Length: 343
Ligand code: XUL
Ligand code: MN
Picture 1 (cartoon, rainbow, N blue to C red):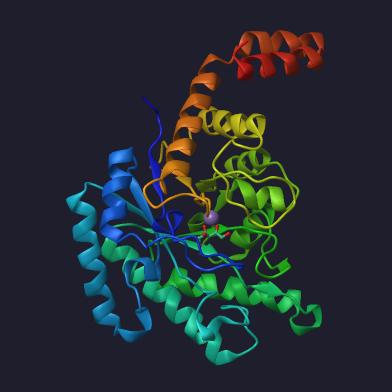
Picture 2 (cartoon, rainbow, N blue to C red; picture 1 turned 60 degrees about the vertical axis):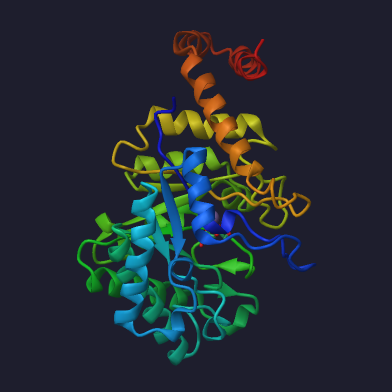
């Protein structure tokens, strides 16, 4: 039995389309997915605004709330919660140059419209967290945007969200690159600085995705630790990554078990979840999987996480202390490896 509650997004089970090829599996209906998620032991669902309200542009503001209420009824039916809502600011033609930091005023207004609608949807789904994955907030052509102005525009957009709803919390999901190559807010360090510059830092925190930290050549556990030291780690997207490549979203722990272990151990040591935070996964099913087996990556990630939780429970803190006193870190390192290898 895990001490944690787990969350997952509907996009984690998908048809297999990627940049290099079309869909290879049927799209599974939303209700079927969440029913299966519940059976697998998930407690909450992560949403983009248009996961909850597809074709969001076609609805009025009142209709969007009504549509979201239908989704809330579905969540209730399966005894699931909503963890957060994230405006999808990278898909619509209005967001080709980014959302909040676009060079075009009309597009920045559209991004704010999506942000406000995401807050309305979150409210209708019964949650108070908004995630900002700032996909296109940055540059491909360096001279096209000023990093100073972009940073200020981002802070301004967050301030407007904080004003729009006095109790909503904003979590920035940092990522250094992809789809752009220089992000305005690449790491949790940047996120904390942005938070401090907003009008209510107590309502602006971070979400760490393991793969995103690795793409910034950082250790995900260290990013987790940094944000926790600030009391601002409100979400995680656990997954794995084989080095500095494209964002792979592999199953948690399959590439670097020790790094995965240290993420789990830190979450446990620092009381993650005690204020209602979820252990979120953001893992992609491989294109080679059949439709019937397109949940296997989630099963694997949960299984590996829980196994690492057991390993962390067994961690011998007295032995660790002894090794530190003796300043024999080689011994400590071998101990960790033997623990992980079950020796
Ligand atoms: C992109 C990514 C997104 C966010 C949600 O790399 O991780 O799926 O988690 O918008
Ligand atoms: Mn993510």
